Amino acid sequence: MIYTITGGTGTFGQAFVNRLLTMDFIEEIRIFSRDEAKQWDMKKELNDPRLKYYLGDVRDQDSMYKCFAGADIVFHAAAMKHVWSCEEFPVEALRTNVLGTDNAVSTAIDCEVQRFILLSSDKAVFPVGAMGMTKALAEKVALANSNNGITDIIITRFGNIIDSRGNVIDAWHKAMNEERELVLYEGAATRYFMTTEQAMDVVVSAVMVGSDGEIVIPDCKAALMIDLLEAYSEKYNYHKMKALGGLTTGEKLHEWLDEDRCSKHADKYTKQELMKMI
Image 1 (cartoon, one colour):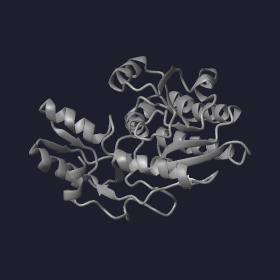
Image 2 (cartoon, helix red, strand yellow):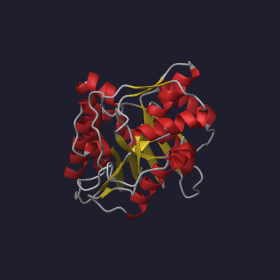
Image 3 (cartoon, rainbow, N blue to C red):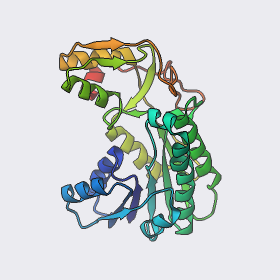
Image 4 (cartoon, rainbow, N blue to C red):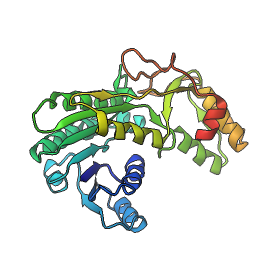
């Protein structure tokens, strides 16, 4: 089996590669990304002959063909995922998240890939900001290309990966190391959270049992953001905190995994569970 991962040098991509390398039936893993520095670091760290690296950008369809040709499964993880950057540069988010997904799906079909797995976000449901809107459109693009008779198109949609780069925990780590206040914009907000391991389990499930045109959604707990802040403060014994009492642009008070499941009403993590996760 040959697997291709777009955005393969990101937090999820690197973790997923490590898991795939434990599977003997995988002949080759292709890493597609536009960050040559991260590719070089990854190449030095993971000295495995099954890993192949391809520089390119999902905005440029031509750059994907060599990486997709002969692949059995494509995992499309490349995206602009940070709310602030999508709000500041919505056209860039459109080019990467929507047009980039269209390029990736089209290339997968052209190359007769067996399965195409799109990694999506709970922000795609009832979106209020550019990140959510572009992820919602990415899902529409993927689904519009399903039932093509060549490539099964499957979407995985999950919440925030708690141990990923650039999220709130990462921001608090940096603030603590610099002895600054831990900033929380809205303590009453609720968010779905998963570990990277849980997110990978969802993707593996999509490969194993997902059907063409299906959106695979996990059972996922949520956290009240003030609970997350207090759990962080207790775990690291760091008590410089500041709650601002307002959402940032592009965010909503509660997230949705689908039209029926809202984080406000979901099972909540206890502070003890959160302390173990962070």
